Every structure is written in C-alpha cells, then in structure tokens.
Image (cartoon, rainbow, N blue to C red; front, side, top):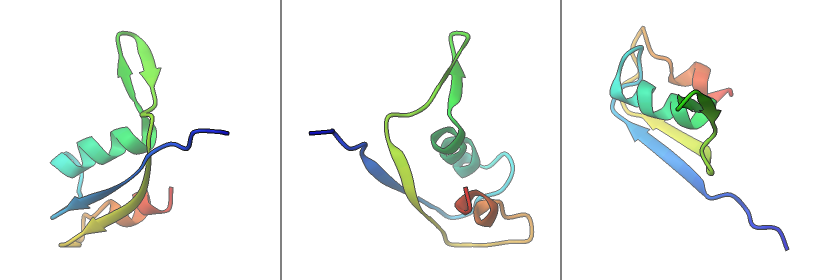
Length: 65
C-alpha cells in the first residue's frame, strides 16, 4: 500500500509579484532552497482561489502548472 501525499488548497485575496500569496504558494509549486539544497514540500497544491484578479495577477499562470 502506498501512502498518498496530502493535498492542500490555497486561498488568497490577491496574487501578484512580491505578494504574500506569491511567496507562499510558489514554494509549494516550485519548492525552495534551504541550507544549500532544493526542497520540495511533502504535499501537493491542488486548488487555488484568488478573490481579486487584477491586471498584474499571477494566479492564472500558476494554476496551469
């Protein structure tokens, strides 16, 4: 029996460059560097909801990943 990875969702008001949502969600999608190594979270981001989609929004691009 294999253990499935936890599935999580992200909810944000806005998602643009340098926003809190961008910093947090991108780490779940792309991973992050820590102590000289690249790490991937032990969970999968499977849903993303952004309340206010503006001209500089990044959520649509990230959702396709």
